[in-house]
Length: 102
Image (cartoon, rainbow, N blue to C red; front, side, top):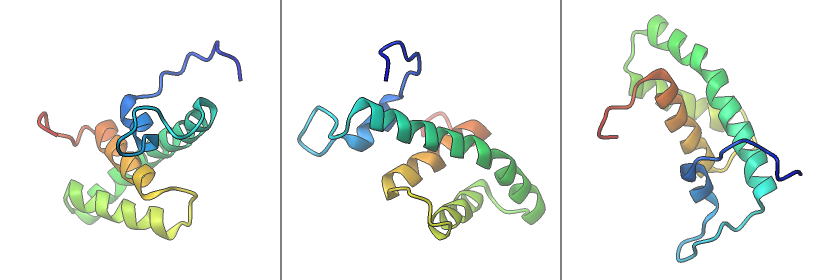
């Protein structure tokens, strides 16, 4: 992979690959970038579904996120629990559901 890659991986995602007590990620930049692309794409793809569920079911935003989490687990996607949580946090950001203190 070229060093010309312009994608900036958020520190919150890189942190998923830093073991406690360490400062450097345990995976290569290429692997982290691949996982980030997958998780970012997934969060973006889920925005329409999340909006639809919020409207159709008349449930809270947190309930939508809980259902999305259940769906991610049931789908058998190749996601770690930390990645799934990151996807849900990113989805909440994209939907404008995070409060200023979150």
